[in-house]
Image (cartoon, rainbow, N blue to C red; front, side):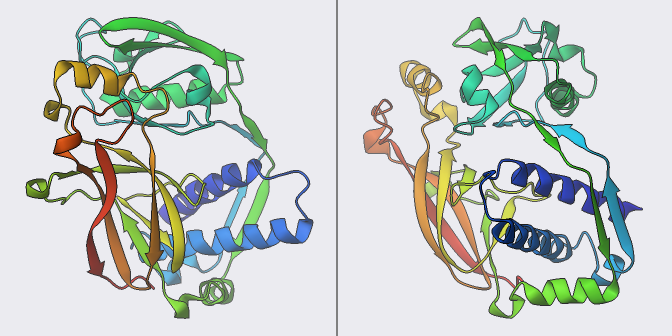
Length: 312
């Protein structure tokens, strides 16, 4: 049952990803993309250790048509929700916003703290930030029309509202068996290896390197991951990255300018991935450019470590 649940979650994520595909895409191209993504999901589950290959034998996954929507923002689910919204640290912190997503359309910014959804204070949700974001997700998928968020920004409350883009996903049925699973793993070209992009934070502070957030890989939001790394095929990739520099490194005016950036302050990092290598991504704080917040030249995305790790 646990295996089914994990694969069901992965398969649902795949369906949401493909829901945005162009209606004019050729059927053969769409089928190939579906095939590639399913194989990638299988490998990720096995590679992460969540599922053993023999557990994929005789598994059937099915779902009725569902409505799905994504906020399009990276939020801190581990946060303490504070004291009902009055404190400066109340609400769920927004770490990054995906360009073109629902959050960006609403006007949400990195550095905002979401304190209420449609007038309902998030601190009323027991269980901290995780429960609050689950409540937000339920609201996104309810199909109730416009979404209204109350956020804290620069010490003041702001009301953001607008329609949310949602997808009605078709029902599906996926059947795996021992032969099917083996064929799927082999068909991905696993013999050519794979690499990983990791945001696990072991960055050397002595070199002024801080955490980073991967917003997109090759223009697409990375698939949900149970850990701080993303599995990719060898070759050239372009990462869209947001910085996670400690706010205490900035003065009050610099923090204010940083929080007010409407574009998220993202940068691109080009990377040639070699098989069997994990690339740890961070954001380097350029101290001599500390005051250049507006032109976003105070930091740069970097690969601060390359680790040889089996990925097949």
